[in-house]
Image (tube, rainbow, N blue to C red; front, side):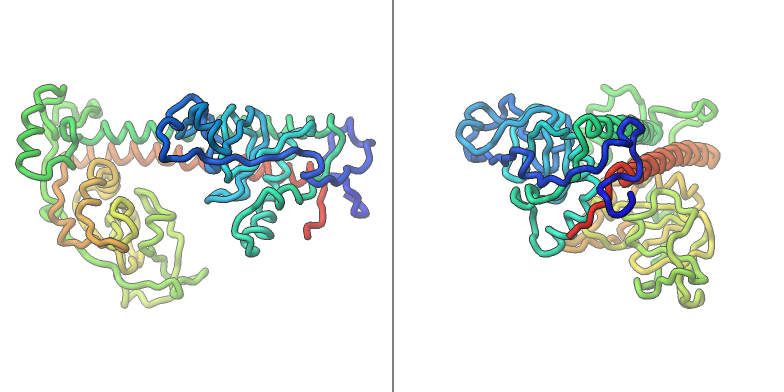
Length: 439
């Protein structure tokens, strides 16, 4: 773009001589409306055939709720068509926009835009400008968007054929991203199923059902209806270990020693520190079952801290919810400073195997050990009582760990591919739309 003209940096050859784009206010070229919510106290308004789209569902092909014709007639809910442009006005995804994938009804948290102009073109522009919209109208003090705010936004428009060409180009890229996202979901589902089958599962109701003797007797009484003759043999087993018999069952305290990490505050983290370290919050936000590349560093003295041994398994000692705290990771390297609020498990069992096992077969059981309301805590004395099963042959432990680690590597690579595609699309959009001065 030259001389601040409303011309994009990237333009399809057939439109090079079309001149400048034209600024238009959304409210001048789109008709718009929001919906409403049928009374939740009227049962006859729900469980109908009309998909009820809420703000978090504007980009989905299926909704959680459905309403009836009566619910539609007796509320402010409004019908939208597949292909309409939807904008989330408030909620966690305020400022998001999407092309509706279904016919349905919308609530008051959504603005529907309809026009002869390309909805897909406008959707991509609003997506490109979302950070600016959020910064100006939400983080700037408004709290929520409103229909009037959205309708006041200025959009640069080329002629309709160029709009359609740009929309088609970006939609094709969206389809590629969607295909890779679907592949990612399939990989995650495969991992979940694989973990369920590689680790022994208690018959029918699961190990977490053993809350008292009555439950125990109930579960044992239905054992014979299941294929496996033992709860300590996994459904899937690598061929070379098929004749190795049952897995060993022990209390975690019988096969492991426990330590606690020492405090490393956020202020102690420095970009070019000389000592790699792990803080407990990073188990929730950054690390998975294996930790080989360290995110944070500190200049604190190693003599004052607890350092890892290779194969250590770490679990948070505090967290916001019981299920979140049941998160295990294996530290592959020695000499990593382990921060406070970390439970450290040292064992001869393969640490990667143990981390996957705890996060799958024992996650619910660990969660039930945690105590607290606003903040939950998990202590070594509680973890010591946890019953675990593991193959006696270290090679089988390692084989399971390697299998799941390899699958995680595929999942990570797929995530990175999707992020690269999204960055490519963002860069392409920045070139396909002219720069305008935001106020």
